[in-house]
Amino acid sequence: MDSEEQALEPERPIIDPHLHFWDILPAPGSLQAPQRFLFPECLATIAASGHNITHTVFVEVSQMYRQDGPPEMRCVGETEFVTGIAAMSDSGNYGPARHACRIVGGADLRLGARVRPVIEAHVAAAGGRFRGIRMGLVYSDQGLFGFPCEPQVRGIMLTPGFREGARVLAEMGLSLDVWCVHTQLGELAALADALPDLVIVLDHVGTPEATGAWRGREAGALAEWAAAITELAKRPNVRVKIGGMGMDLSGAIPAGTGTESSTALAAQWRPRVETCIAAFGPERAMFESNFPPDKAAGSYGATWNAFKRIARDYAEEEKDRLFRGTAAETYRI
Image (tube, rainbow, N blue to C red):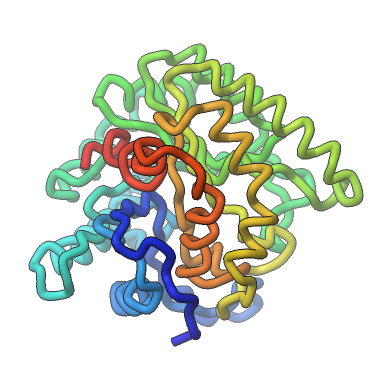
């Protein structure tokens, strides 16, 4: 286990609203480093951090899909897999925290109204834990994590089929998690306007691009991003997850843990964090770990210490919303 910083405010209750479980196996020619982050690794990581994680929310990462059956239903295998972890956690045998107590699964919303049976299968498999869908919407001309760009993803949020599928979520009382880069935030705002009854959660602060055509233009990208975030926040049905800032989008997600201190991470992240909180307010913002991808920058403990350093001067009620309350409300914990 990597060495950890001492936790700041170790008794503060935290709901981590964005955690993944995966087992990335060696594959010939794969750009992705083999790595495992399953329940034992999660428990060890959180225990070493010293932070008071009371609940975690699992967010889809295309793991453990079924190999058989209709293609559109294979994603339900991931919910079945994570439900097993949640059941283990609910036993109390592994400590008081409740892991994967809520599940955000995957589905192809481009199916339109035909996605309803897929989502109903997720709900049935999850034992009351299912809260929403995330599908691959992030698009960058230069690709992500060392993989080439996916032209078929461009502009999906503007298509009638996708919006029809997203409308099914609203009708079922479920939410939509979206990870996109800053050049897509206008599309997300248009989606929020078209579906005002749909709760939309923007993941990873709507990542400002900094590679490819944006390399060397980081200041311009941040300025565009900040303006788009401020505009998006005018939609009351949108919430923001503050995290995902430790990922390196230019190459494969590493298996090891970065060495940045919480002081360094706080200095790097503060402008984006404060912009999001100013735009959305603590009542619609929540801190997220995005582990294990964000461990590319630093440890789990350093990540939460960084957020605590940034939020140090906020009022207690505001801190509670950022670390726990907004997540509890959004995912009905």
